[in-house]
Image 1 (tube, rainbow, N blue to C red):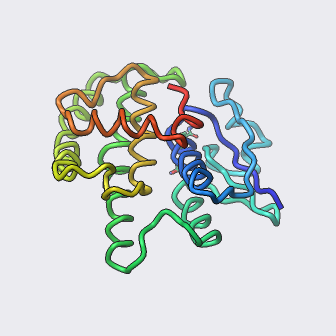
Image 2 (image 1 turned 135 degrees about the vertical axis):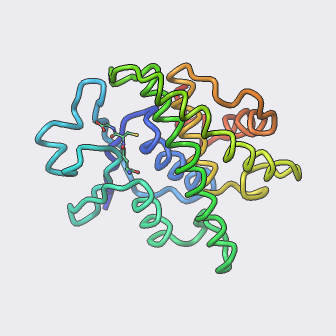
Length: 212
Ligand SMILES: N[C@@H](CCC(=O)N[C@@H](CS)C(=O)NCC(=O)O)C(=O)O
């Protein structure tokens, strides 16, 4: 059975899942998922049809084989990790898995989500009003996590967790793409993160998914 991933390109949370699926495909695990566009620029996420899938009116949504839905990006990824576990993206070993999940949460909560809020506060593709105060607060809060990620990369590793790609890379790139889409330069002053960004965008999985 083919599952359906309701998504919109460039939006961070759908992109995170699409990068994950594309990374799995690039490593030989073609997951049985087809994508279905829900155009947020046209407000389709608030249509009765989409609200019936997800009462919160957000994307991504994964429709499972039995017609039920998962409506949280990380919940979707963890479902796919556990259902198609051979070759999954999380490392083996309790502590290593815990660290991989922790790093993904740090990236999401302290970098990708603030980047997305920054774009909505400065140049929202959904047409939200500008909010210079929120933008300034986000700019002031970002360096703590950006410096932390920069310190991880200082040992010469290819990706955030090490040489293998991990969920944290998918999450960070989903935020970075949205920042590019919203013309926000938030990586300036972080040379190792800028280099990671360039490298990650050259990955075959990234090239299939990223639009900006
Ligand atoms: N916590 C949810 C957040 C989902 C979310 O906010 N998605 C955004 C796109 S990145 C969305 O659908 N925005 C449209 C809207 O809120 O109207 C997840 O991780 O899936």
